[in-house]
Length: 219
Image (cartoon, rainbow, N blue to C red; front, side):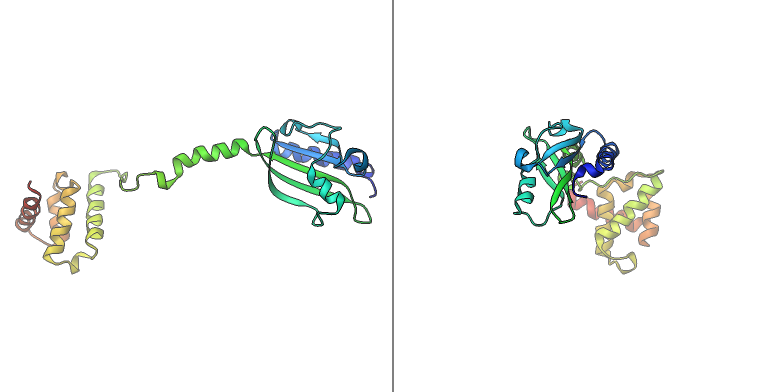
């Protein structure tokens, strides 16, 4: 292909197809680069969703086209780069060059996707999901009955002590019972029976441990 007009129907269809796929925030442009002497960085011959950058058919291309035409930029195609409109909206862009049999650029397709609203949405979502802004000290677990709550507290008490009950000393058990008392475990009906069973102690011992705990707290 020596001129984009040779495949203008296919190129026009491609431009429309990309724009339809990604919606009204996606501008897709076809530029003729063979008239750069007259139009500088190329002439826009097809454009979809031109409101994204405010351009229309007959307008010129960007500085990237100049660099490629001048030979300053030898790499050619540019994928997934960030640009900004004159009114400050952020675009995610890709530019793909069409070359003739000699490898010279004769046209290009440019895709400019306006991600401004997505970036604003991301910022709003982060307000709710940023763990650095969330109080992670509070532990709340949703269960179906109070026995599940007690089982959870007993497990947390073991984690707090840092060893299984079979290896706990008297002091360790008092530490665990203190944790349970602070978490309100003894407000649960018949919790004493389950806690005694877990720690392998009698109710008399449990009450002695509780007295020890509460006396140090001034309760």
